[in-house]
Image (tube, rainbow, N blue to C red; front, side, top):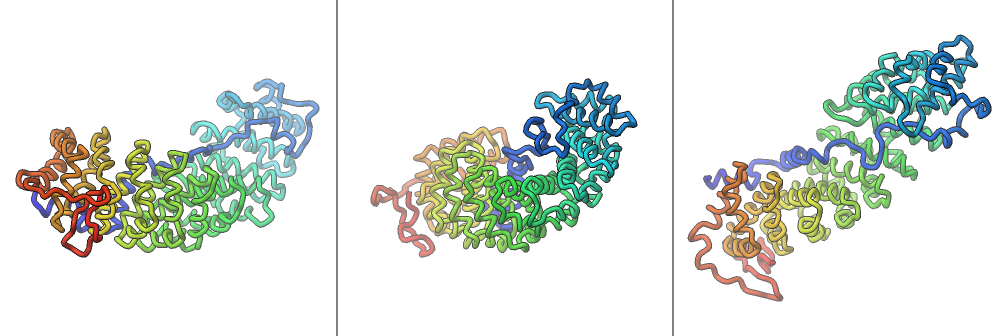
Length: 517
């Protein structure tokens, strides 16, 4: 491989930092799946006992829950509203069983069209409420079960209930619509296209109850989530000012779903990221990186990580808000997923310019990152490897010297044993970048010695027979360019100073200690 091709392969020559960040997004697919850790996307009212005191009608005597499914359906078909109510309440209770609610059986009996019909009975709010709750539970099931609700025309009738003066009824409608939106992109877009979002946003006021607020924000997050395709940004953008205000709220459930919504809205191009930044919410979002609630911290880290996939100015907004100050703690978090997300976030920051990389160094993050690279679980190690290699791509020679001095080579070489092809490829890129930088100041041999001493050379040589062609080519290129005969002969022995190997540098761009290990 010619020198020009080698440089283009290993130094990201001709690629700006935006492209490098985009490459990181493509390589971190498992991080980008919009799954809510520790949270359900769809919620079902399960415990009848704990919900019963909040019901608008306290008709505990004559409990209708003992009715059979067939009796329920017969009662719902009655023309007597009192019978309808009791049967619909029994239907709701049957669907609220904690274990194996008979959703399919109730659908087959035909309760869905009847419940949808009852949603329009505006002179009987209690019947509306029970029907809405039953539909909420049906819509919380499988895609087929959710579809049974949508196909009967429930969305516009649920939307009409959002305007109800009865807040418990409006809240139940929010819950049902949130379940429908959470089923996937198709139903989400049906809810969005109906214009439901502005109606939900109008429910969020200073005096809104915590219960309604939690459900409203959760429904909003479901309207913002899912990809292939993403929601029409113009339709979800009106939620941004409200979400920015909700970040000041103290309730952890409200904060968690607000952060999830923001993580979905920032998961896209720079225009989307900028729209979020324009609300001024970044300083508060960065504050939440210090949250001791993992349900809040997880989506907050994701949202911040998404923002730093943007351009340098957008990344600077996060850095200026102090995100790097909390990064060491996140890289040492007891929850492995937080470490992984923090390393991924850092990899997008180190894909930036040398000033941003210097801020990472100055914040004392590199030792924590290298600890993850050495001892973290594999998913975290993989993200740490990307962070280090991106650092080697965008950093100047002095910064690469610092990275080497802090001990990056050994954990990088250790990962060459990985079964994951992409990780091996990323590490080879990083090692090649370091060797190329050393070559510029005449220190190639000394770096090569350290790589050899920690077993890296043997591993690189073995990769020349790797089944993956790209890995084979990268390994071969490193051997030919930096370890071929004549390259490593007659090396002057490195000198030792305070227990560290010290390489003197002929250029002032490297710290006076040279490359230290």
